[in-house]
Length: 315
Image (cartoon, rainbow, N blue to C red):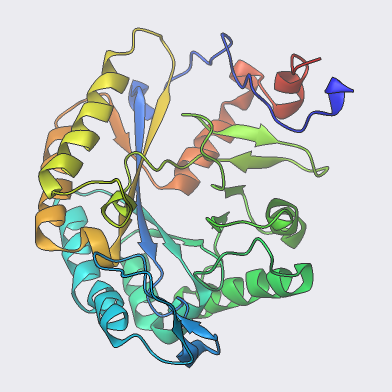
């Protein structure tokens, strides 16, 4: 009976790979920009309730059948100001990012998607809407994945190769794999390395994400109060990864939201971290597609797949 247990509690265990990232680097740092503005709950988008969370101020009162102009304005800041501040900071440090972008947001502002692509950043599907997909029916979720692919392809000339819903349904990963054009998804938080996912009959890569090094903690309670705290969290995380005596590659994910990290003090924390991290010769800043492809190219060197890892699952 325990052979059917659906969770993998072991992962790589003691069989962690010994290969390195490009040029012998030990730590791959993935900067992720979350672009949800224009795709959140809003009666303008056909929803019954307007968003009033996910920003610095949220009073918890539902905005049924009416717009929440204050929250809308905070979201608007993300695409009007915050994104350009973050993109300029990334440019100044020559750091490429992956952009988790909602399909509806891209439809509303395709010029921003094109600008991100021109700067060398990767667009990754982030659901069509910034909503919880847990109870969304399968046909709708499938259609939303396809519409997101179409929106990004139209805006940039390239289809997305990665996917991250964030608030998934039980069908999400299967639908992403069935769509057929994705190399990886990031709807996992269970490791510091990519790994293979073969549960649905085809090779697929999972590039895990993280919430400890994520600015969404400014919009949750308890969370972060100052940009200084955020910068310290990022630097301390990198320092610990670099201090790890195990000869194994690691990955660090950093989550930034336009409306949150785009504010001056928090953007300064991002700048402080990048100045620190880019001075370390063992750090490789990479887009998630580049991390996934490197892992795929070196998979045979460590010969760890989901099938192999599950051989030791709780029995």
